[in-house]
Image (cartoon, rainbow, N blue to C red; front, side, top):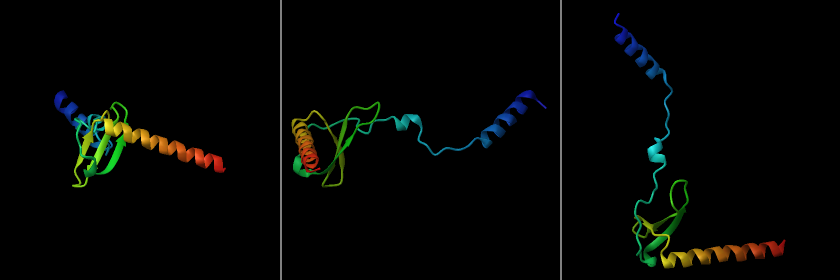
Length: 102
């Protein structure tokens, strides 16, 4: 038998016995969800906000609109910065109240 043919058969035998995996390829796992962001999104058209902080990606804000479309919002947008400040202050106040009760 030819050595090249024997090597090919051995390689195929090993490849068919290798365990299969259902994980996504690294290139898909490490991709950021937001590739581009919008600066102007009417606040009244937003149904829900999601905040993503994943390794290798900047802070990402995803808005689900009333039309069920999802768009990425620039985290530096002025109204969004104010929204985040208000949300953080509200959480701090709630924690202070809860700690005083205990």
